[in-house]
Length: 295
Image (cartoon, rainbow, N blue to C red; front, side, top):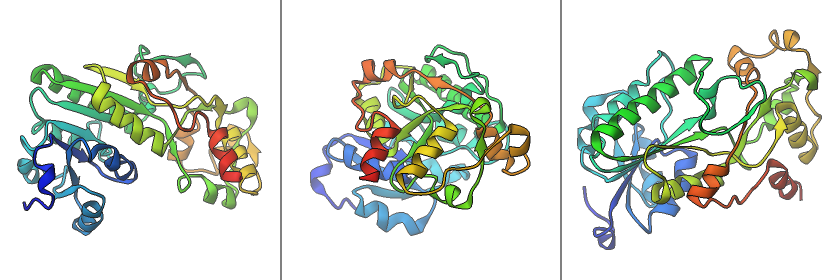
């Protein structure tokens, strides 16, 4: 693999696994401190990743025989890849764990869905997980696999539990244009949010400042129900707000996956993230972001 930038050879190495939207936002925050490698299963993405300042590596977490080149490649690994779409285990994370470095650092981006329905309660990272759907079960499996690896490898692991990610190009505008309904206020659920740029910055902070074997709620300061979020986006962009319907009626109008998202109510506390990682959010709330988007 030819090195295109000799000045980078003396830097420690970092590997970004699953370099999608958040990964691309993360690369500029890492490449001055690391020689950054980016794993992709799509050869067509190699020019894009190279242009973003990473050294692309084509391999597939679903094909473990393609991962052998990654063994010992980087001391720091940022795991952004989602679990497979089926099963109760995260086979991709299990495959990745076989090549992770001893005494290294891993940051894993998980999901707040591991908690299941919290009944609208406000809670911190000490709350036990209680996944209510197969997607969340696979995330819990990934977390446990990485915890076992970290103990055996005497490594540092930070788990970031991430909620709904938003950005200029990650808003529910099409949903609003289609008139997809939301729940009546009295039946609605609390939801959590983080801007994609803030998430990338928090991942970088976790690389440098995350405590060993530590979980962080990677959420902003918003405290709103899901329907109120849709209403706020609709107002900001001059769209009609979603119709509000009872849950029994909603079940017949949305997909089972969407219904599951609208059946879990949580308000996650983020004090540990701010205190231990020194995070200062660019967008403290969705409302702050929408105010500038509207302007």
